[in-house]
Length: 103
Image 1 (tube, rainbow, N blue to C red):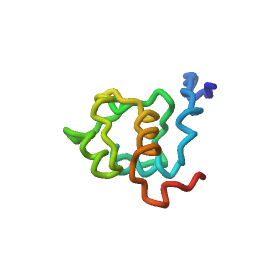
Image 2 (cartoon, rainbow, N blue to C red):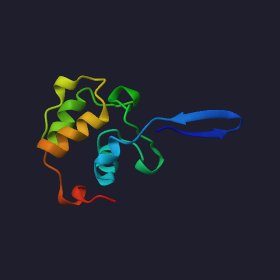
Image 3 (spheres, rainbow, N blue to C red):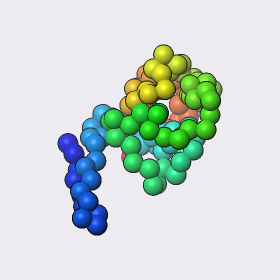
């Protein structure tokens, strides 16, 4: 479901978060901070958010994800959806215990 809101006369429609919300928000915050290099409090992600939506400084983000979470996402490519990455981390990855907590 979309969430329209207006700011200065411009209507912005946020994408659905139904799929991304299946994963602990602590995982999303950790990923946003440690992989995307952004402030989780000011970063909105949706089911359609992909790696190429963000200015990532690393030449090999797949390697960074592997080193941090223990999953290979290189086959997903540079346009990998974050929800697909979160699925792999939750299913096959190494998540610090704090990331298992659902808020």
